[in-house]
Image (cartoon, rainbow, N blue to C red; front, side, top):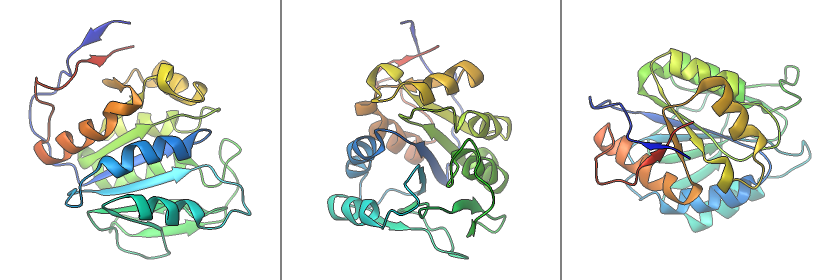
Length: 212
């Protein structure tokens, strides 16, 4: 694996982090979210592929072990910094232009509802260059097209190093399509997000990043 520093040097204010995750997602989220401090100054919006019959266990479990508040997103709810929102089971989660949520029962995308692509594409329209998109472990290719849209809108794309993913297919598909600027092992991602959101860029004292 080759290593290089991020090419971004100008500071950007990031208002939200959109996360897409599927198989192996609970372990990935409980590795990242508890490491975010209580004063994390951006919203975290998560699409985790779920069984349509699931309840809100994941949100309640993560809320118990994190400093930031974790909850399921609700229709028309305004998106606030320092809160992590999860897409409810069997609903697409969309971000509106006024940075509130809407829920949809439209057809599955990439065989999934909620769909990561749907979240990422609508979040890219709402946040533009103030959005970070993150693709984590998963067993399909959902999120690749959406991450591409985030980058095209000026946002920053991050992908979990497939070698650290329980299911490699989703991060690998994102790397192959998008060739993202930053690829990190799971254990490093929380630190990276905190530095990016607080400082708008990565300092040189952070661990090097692996490039596809």
